Image (cartoon, helix red, strand yellow):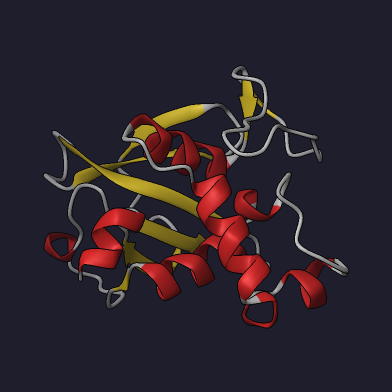
Length: 164
């Protein structure tokens, strides 16, 4: 798998970049797709209805929502998960992070990163592992505390969100 961060035109809804490419956010999008949640559609619809709540205009100088890229940007996913899911406290205690939780980091220099906690524990630390892609394809690693955590979220999808 190649780490490819270039802009790509994709189908909507249900679009994806080529399966052998992607960035960190694509791992999150694919994980949710595997359980029937299309983050491309969910994020795009929320951005269309709440454009000013998202950083797209200021950060990327976009004039309007773009279903090709908006869901692939970590800052947009942070806003979306805060709005439509649960924003949980950032903690330095591993026990506060559960499988399915989404974690965001600053890799340094204001470079955002995102990953998902999975139900496999590290043999060394006993912590749940993280699935992420930091440039070498998808990996499952014990990296929860490797960078500065900037967000901790739980999102169950639109149907469960409406039930609460």
